[in-house]
Length: 303
Image (cartoon, rainbow, N blue to C red):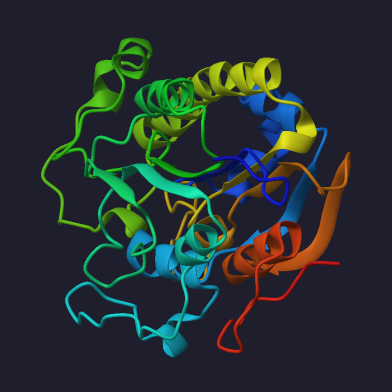
């Protein structure tokens, strides 16, 4: 059911590997639909991740805790989140929201980071924004009798080793053959991929594709909800290495993350230059939605 104490829709969109350090100067050009939408909200211009890949970053966002406090930092050294550390989805469910993770990679299931979601659709490595947009719209149209907290994880802009994944055909068609062929290379995890013309062009193309999909979603929300009825939160878990000449773990391209918000209670037309971190997302939602923040939370509310 609906309640005057809740918003009809709270939507968290995790855009995996969307580096704000890369995107900042070309934001309006590369993502015109997202740029237009969040001009009526807040964009955090000095926002940084707590880790360089998704597994610990997702935990930091969903708990508001640094990895050294949650103990969730590596999938091969598995640790379940303590039950007295209340996740973001648990807070929302306790408030009466229907909680749905409509597209995720599953990295929060076994460590209990996503234990508050009533529904989880896990589709590892197939987290396309066009499909996620359609899932959200269909879900909202089919479930009009509830207030929703929805999580959507998309990986359009995430670079992958070319031996495992193929970049967009539109990128391949534009580049000469020499730029498309990758010879024998030492296996490198995706967070540390070296720069290449192919990876960089793939990033910009996928960012453009992402903008087209999210533009459809935002147009739907604007036509079906008033700004007081929704809270839209778009953020990334980390950046990318493919624009850095010498990638290293605290490289600005790898740690410079994206965060922007629009909707109920969010100031309009602000580009905030204060330093913010992935752990600050949790207390910010707590402030805007009026749920308690435990003493275990490391994040703080931005000014």
